[in-house]
Length: 159
View (spheres, rainbow, N blue to C red):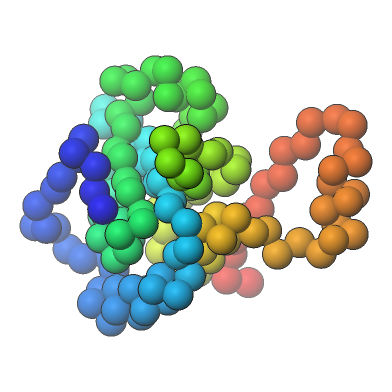
């Protein structure tokens, strides 16, 4: 479901084709359990790929009722930029949504979601919707015991 903040015409070349859309919709029908809020941060004046990055997120929001999308220009929403620690654009924040509360799990995508990165994005959305991490109990226990702040970065490559 697209937010009222941003609605676009489908006049550009499709990044996500119909076959992929159908398969993702089938997957979402069983994987999207709880509501998801996608927050896309763009910079209209300084970002070459921001406009191109919007389309896949719009498609994802259209494929499941429990997924909402907001497009946020960093110049127009400085409080959100600070709240979600936006340092680069385009940046997608994947949040859970419970009633009127947004839950930030710290998941960020800082790249155009194509190829292998698109499947990683789909998996991340599913995990947030289930409110699951797939970490083993021992790993969760070790992370919980950490006494210092931790920032984990995952890089996705086809090699």
